[in-house]
Length: 317
Image 1: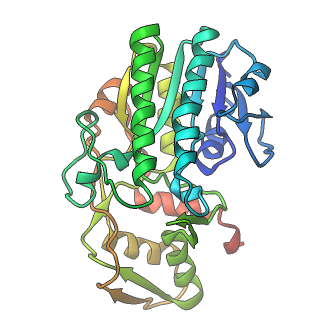
Image 2: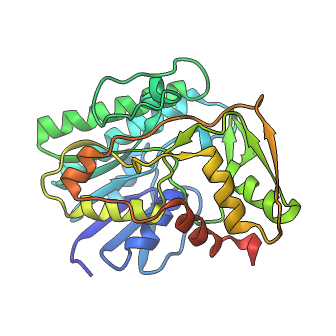
């Protein structure tokens, strides 16, 4: 185990828990939660509301690195409360930055959404690590995206003003092996698409294929992403925004075939093509800078990822 002490703010969600499960043996980790008490191997937990400055007074101050995952996002928001995005993602981030500044913590790793590159969602053109933001100013993601961009600007200010090392990872959906199968769309609860597809293959021997089967997207796996986090913890000079995808987008057609291969127990699984339904986004990440700075290469391809996820899905047991 490294002697580095890590504060993981937001360790109780899918992303935070997945990272903790992968790197707990490497570092001394303190995780925070807001609503649900957690118990993970070799990790101590405490409650923290990043919107409440007073909560930070209970934290230790000798961390080598803070990882900020906690945030308000559409996928976890029942209904629609735009003010919460500002309270959590802007004011909460500012509170974390102040905690780092006051206690001379030298490094902050921040998780950023790729919704700041809206003009690339369906273009198939690789998303560069840097460049001007392009936002969708309508819909339930608009203020969320604005708040995340504002948070990144705050990080850059604290880097330039106070010499805080800030590493920002822009992520698409990171696929995890936990049992958090539901999320919110426009404030209403839904089951994650790939979970629904897997269940239908297993129980009905059929799968719905929505929209354009050629649309392809980056599908990073939590085990690869956790390894990238470790590389960032250890890197003393990396600075700025880095893409955290794969650079190898998976087409819907490929995804469907691989789900059938991994999860079907029968022959001739029926594909139901619904071209009139919304298509998945069509995007990929330019991983040049991430590979150059961190020496990072994803280890999991789609098939290996789905096989690994299969081992952990409770409804398969």
